[in-house]
Length: 260
Image (cartoon, rainbow, N blue to C red; front, side, top):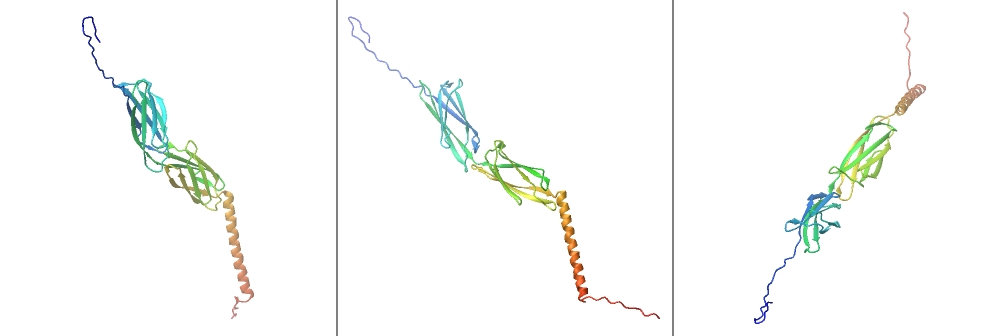
């Protein structure tokens, strides 16, 4: 309003438009395909007018697996989260929702999607020794991996003609069994059927072989038993022949030659 004595007052109006500062959010999830219990990296990049926004509050949530977290952007407007993928028994799409907020700005939202797949278990088995003597201790190492990553808490079963075993892998993906090689009378090859299973993974199966040789005592025992059997057979034959002679079933005649 403008006024002066002797003049009419003049009132002028002017309007200005104030635009809110809306945060722009970009989300990247790596890798785009993840296997059960694999690592998921979620990165939020927050900007305004092309410039990174420092100390913006970030909230992350997921459509599956209850994956959520909060954080604050750094001087580059970046905030990164690392999640362990949930175990899935079938291919599953998961969406990550990201919200960015800061005082003086309008919140921004964005999202990104990844695919979860069941892992495929792999067996790496070692038998020490691979050829054992009867009664010797044998160590069986079962190493379970998925995509070169050790898998913990895998249920491992071993089935064989001389016994069955079971256990779980440790944090190194190892399940170790110790057993005594069975008694044999001749070299014998035993098949060990090994299975590994865990929810969220495709089972692994394999057949491995252990050769067992008799010990010296076993060999001596085997020879002694064989000798006794042979002697028993000979004795039975002698008795039968004696009985045949006794009851005149078999007769022996001797002819004398006349002297001329």
